[in-house]
Amino acid sequence: MPVSLALHSYFNVGDVAQISMPGLAGLGYIDKLRAGERRQQMAPLVINEAIDRIYLDPPQSIEIHDPVLNRRVQVRSWGNTELVVWNPGAEGARAMIDFDDAGYVEMVCVEPAIASDNSVLLVPGATLTVGQEITSTQLASDVG
Image 1 (cartoon, one colour):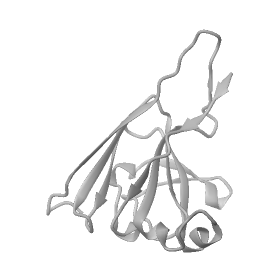
Image 2 (cartoon, rainbow, N blue to C red):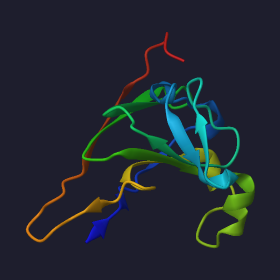
Image 3 (tube, helix red, strand yellow):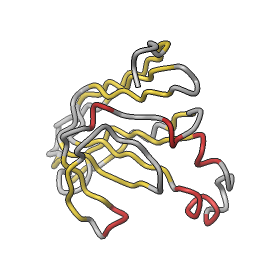
């Protein structure tokens, strides 16, 4: 049986346009909003528009730096081959009936995943373990 999955973790943030995710710098990704184009994240991720990306071969630990809420959220994952980052942006939020029109400003979805072309084939008796651990700490004043 082929298996693909994502652990849908939605994080409350102070302002999505002010967060950064430095651990994604240097990673390749599939941009689902640009017809599946493959691109490279050259700098820490800053979100200033709708985003739906599948980051390939992510590190086991990714941090969300949130200066508005003065915190750093660490997402440590295992068993996944990708990391999805999603935010619908203003237009996308307005188009969804089950999403507050301004809700996109205060959220980011960071999902450890097995996606794209990396589905896992489970044979009878085989197991697959995917997990995550989430911690939150105060953001040090020298971290951006």
